[in-house]
Length: 220
Image 1 (cartoon, rainbow, N blue to C red):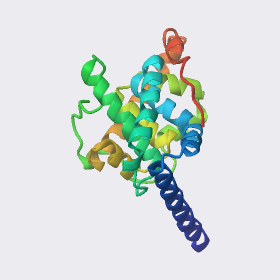
Image 2: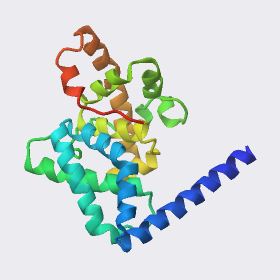
Image 3: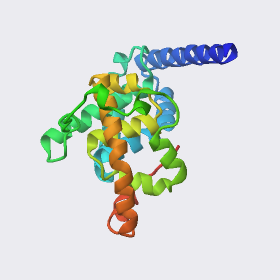
């Protein structure tokens, strides 16, 4: 246990040093740093945008805009938060701005009928393999990605951040600017909606949904 704690502490210090180095480079508008950041985060950022918008052409436009914002506003990044959390916040704000101009479902207007902590299953309060992780291990990754696109945006977002990006619940709450209880509620409801949609996809032989998800590039 002590060795694990030491390794965790060292990883945290390393992450802090990396964030500080990125902050310094962005303030100097280092072009080589920006190239490295794009190379490092491009697939994760594009995946996040794809799952938020469900449209490749929209995601690609927003992807370009995110990096323009990073270039223009890089001096605002102070290194106190993880860099991926910062750029995901930029991406999320762009999606919200776009949803106000179009008819896309808003991330912040999803219906939460009940967020009573006492109504959640016990496993939602614990760490360890989740129903989503267990499902993703058993099922075809492509099918899971396809089903994610059918969920409401708020649920799709929190599942993507939790299980693709491996963010903690606290980090998701900070990024999405909602209470931790709301994050947990959306996570539970998203997981509850995932399985029946997967069964529906298979019952229909994947018709319609396959083409929709075919453009999603799921990478680790």
